[in-house]
Length: 410
Image 1 (cartoon, rainbow, N blue to C red):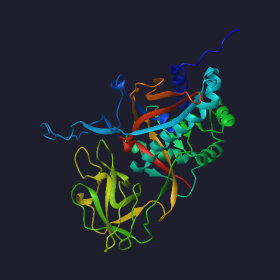
Image 2 (cartoon, rainbow, N blue to C red):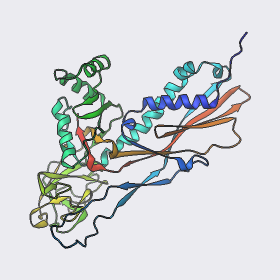
Image 3 (cartoon, helix red, strand yellow):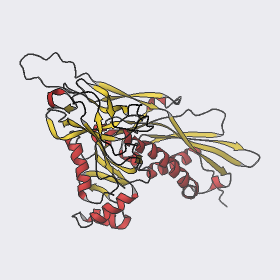
Image 4 (tube, rainbow, N blue to C red):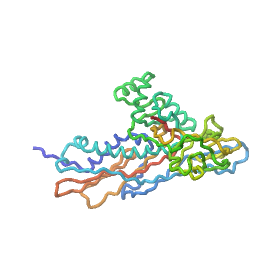
């Protein structure tokens, strides 16, 4: 009579990682970096990775070499600071199950929760994205919604290299599938949409449109209905502006992630620096309260830069006038869905190996497609069970916000 074989920790870890990867939505469509330098000893919370940003240049129409040094290559820092885990518990009997049964009964629900947590943290980076389209309060339902988002990417010279993606919430997915059902698609696309009810892959120039329940809703600050205006002309580069027209001493006048435009501040072509026909959109980087004179100091991105390789705006006489109107997207103190259309390099998830502790019954690490997972078990002799945990150590960064666009919804 054949005896049952106890599943090994390596089998369980590899299977768990496969399930985790399959459950990732947004995360699966972005840049993923795994730092192999921690493979032996394991990483600690707070590990930092330097990520190179593409340099920007300015052209000088002259035979004389420009002395500008604006083309210095830049780096940004991603901190691997979030450790997330789910608890696991198997009996000795359960460890003699077939791996497929273990996957269905235990690993699938555990890894689904862990994947949702990682995805949700990544989707919260919508607050770093300043490009936006759509009508707040209205669910996108036509091809035009996705095409206008891609227009924003085109205006910022985002590569059209087959790596543009979108992540939308279930409501937008339902409306878009229904709204686009009459458009031409190849047979495979129509079949997948009909069978799964999902937008799928290779649609309108997007490599993949992912439905994710973790798409965020953004609560706009208490901006009220009064006209907002720049307080004091802006004549030099700055990442902080003063805006008046709020209520006096108003808490939460502006919320991190609020999007707005400034009268007279036009977007520019990133390469030629010529003015575009649309106003530059800005995002508030932090919450801001108004003072007793109804003025709020707002930290913004992109910064206002009138010239050079990093120029972001074009304005008459290289200044933004005092009392220029500031127009926010959305209504005061109202929440709206923040679907995303983006290039895969807009966002980065970095993971690193956690240390394998000594003195435990069994432990293992595995890496798949830039995701590192550690599982550790110890034996409880009193109850004949293996108590364990599955951990991921990770960090998120919106490294190129100019190559992403928010698609507002209901």
